[in-house]
Image 1 (tube, helix red, strand yellow):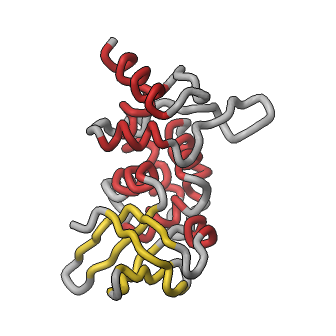
Image 2: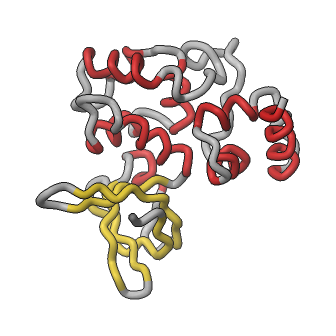
Length: 194
C-alpha cells in the first residue's frame, strides 16, 4: 500500500498529476479542488489511496489526511466507488463535505457528478454517525460558526495517533483554535480521556 507520495509536480492532466519522485513518475488522481491548487514544478506531499482492481491500479491523492479518511469512508458505501467519492470531495473542502454529511445534507452530496439522490441518501445513512459532530449547522451563513480549518494539523495528528475521524473531531470540540498544535493535541487527549 502506498500511503503518501512526496515529489515534484511534473505534469498536470485533467484532474490528475504526475509526481516525479527521484526520476519515477506516479500518476495520481485528485479532486478538482486539489488539482486547481497545485502548480507545476512545486514540491508536494500527497496522502494516497492505492486502489487495485482486476485489470488496473490507480492512485488517488489528497493534500490532507482528513480528506483521505473521508474518501476511505465514502468508498465503504454501497454504490460509491473511488470516482464518485472523488466527485463528492470535489464539491467543497473536506471539512465542508464532512460537515454536510454530519448535517444529513443529502442535497449537497447529490450535486456530485455521478451521484444520484438515492446514493446521496445512502451516504448520509451509512456515514452520518461515523464522520463526527457537525462544526456548524446547515450551509454556511453569517450566523454559522466558523468550521475547523481544512488542513487542521491537530486533527491530522490525532488521526495519525489512531483516532478515527469522528473521535478526533469530537476530541477537538471546544478546544481553542488559537492554541499551538501541540497544546490543542494535549487538550484534545484530555477531552478524550474524560
